[in-house]
Length: 193
Image (cartoon, rainbow, N blue to C red; front, top):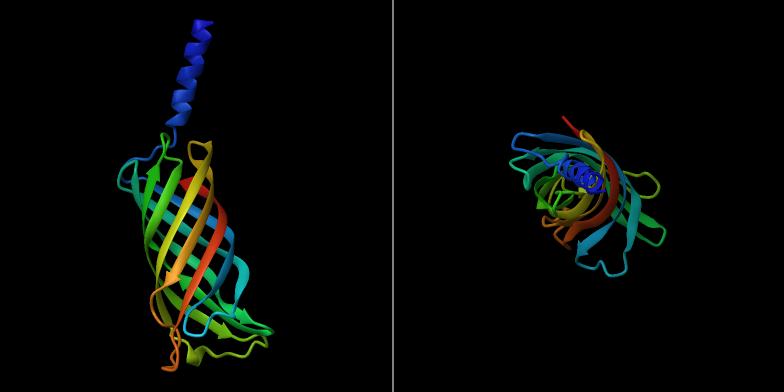
């Protein structure tokens, strides 16, 4: 019985530490998610959220088993709704986040940083473009929390929640200020390269 218990403890110990990363390790994370966004700024109290899908691919470059730099390319549908009217803003966002891995097996992470975004399109509900009224660049503060469910030494499933708060005015008009704000819930595959 003692030998069986010892073998089980050793196996658990090896499994628990199997996915801890070292300096120079890289993880590639394609994902899909559900996002919800609206505007911050002037006269935005009666605006409804825009709820859509999002997707992208991120990568973590590890400095040690606790810290990594996360970046990637994310396709985010942002904007808002007001009755039957819509502001549909599509961006390519590039997060530049510090990612802190915590817990005894480093399966949890908190990330925070900045996210520059580049406007791809701006359309209303009828598909009419108003891209000339929106700044082509936005900068936001990004943050999130996630969990990795280990499947093997080189693959995990990722579940996370992310947020973005715009800090630059996206409206070209001087009459009001508008900043994007959004959140998302995502699932992805984590591949150790």
